[in-house]
Length: 457
Ligand code: GLU
Image (cartoon, rainbow, N blue to C red):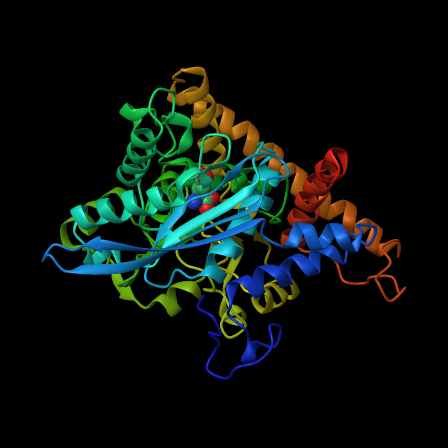
């Protein structure tokens, strides 16, 4: 995640022992792999689609609880506005840096295109440790960060939302700050993921996890895993127990799956006969950790990722499945609820082992999809019922899943016929995985609009 971070023995992106873990280079490598399957896209257009349109760094002072002043660094990257205004979350984490935000912004562009919602991609973040900061200081950081961004965010410019360690409360501060700076108009659509009584959408909090469930259900019903046509009775392992992982565990459990292992930043727990995610959530609420849950055995994060199961859901950080551990994975399917949890070296290993990966830009697109619904409700001064939101989300996720699975089939039929010719004039022989299929779909959708609009002026 950080600049230059590598596995113990440094090197290139595709050799497991020497894998490059810089997420910006990782996102670029993913895109380059997909672009091999799109030989007719012109170089100039590729360059335009690759580079972020705008990268902002702000350094700002904040008064701390003890009266001292600390300077924080904030970022906002607008990757693309070809299909609409920028859209993407704000992350508070000590490791936030420009490369990470650039990668996450690019993934938002491709995610919004796969989900077919009218946005470009963006992302923001402040390098800080929210676990060590009081609510007052977090509110000051948020207000000053948003003030510094000025008109670089806006309801039709770039629309933030929650991401790692930010939530509805943070979004309320974002809204309030923007509203104070732009009084006299409806500013609710400037940010999504707000509290429900402040224009937030019903179902937004659960949307990333629910969208992941819909995508997995759809892929299974279409025969992605032979012999497993539904999540009912499937065994599930979830890495991460925050807003995405904790709710995914609950929703998969409610859908009839057996959630056998979960983890948070302190470690994991396993119970082969199934955990009750609601009870685990109450335990975590009390003790601040999933570990020590009565009736379950504590395991390490490495053991959790290698635990035998039908569906593994990484819902935590980037670069969790890598060249050095993908061989140990014993799941039959991986659904990426987090952004960027699988490295390109791990993609190669998992694909060779026949373990499909539902990529982040599909599997976690439910969050931004309901963000879009929130934005529409705010513009129209409407409030949709939760059932209506969930039903609309189901339709969007199923269409996106179908489009990615269909794209993979089409690409691989063309590969088999030798119809896709690489830059060296030789037909491409490697079959495309689901990440390549999703990126090809996304790039085609963005490139089409770019060509329809033309280059201004
Ligand atoms: N942060 C979420 C994501 O990575 C949601 C973004 C949004 O709702 O705009 O998809």
